[in-house]
Image 1 (cartoon, rainbow, N blue to C red):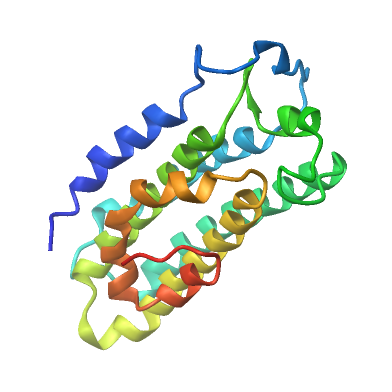
Image 2: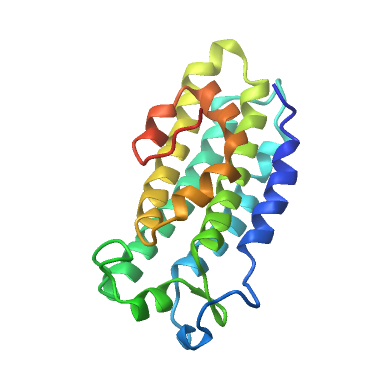
Length: 213
């Protein structure tokens, strides 16, 4: 099994992909001026920042302090972060009348809800944001997995899986916005298979079309 430090390298790559592009758009006139409205990428960027902070205690977890009482409060905070992001993304999508994949949704609408700063993000950019989120979360969960005592595994693993269930609920919403996001995402998240294997939750990801083989 590879060292989980690989996540740091992969995270940097994902972040690079997620950065607003300066060129490469077929028609720059499609860039929407959206004022102060929040967009789906705005939500994802903020969520990554929030979970980084709330997962920080896991960087100090040890065999001695990896207990339910120490893990559960962190999990609760992260679940709240993700649920708020789900609610906001759902609200943004609903308020703009998005009703299906990009083939069914007016281009102008997608330009509004998928913009970040002055640019409209494309599939690879959205995939980069999602990969960054997954890598940050799975990296922190792996720190817990590595030190949890055998006697506590069942209950603590259950807590960690709850986080991934919510993450997949968010992924399902975002993946449905633009064709090609999933195909771009899969190569970026190969290494989270380590965590998914250990937690035994491949079915959660498979349910939204993510097969980590």
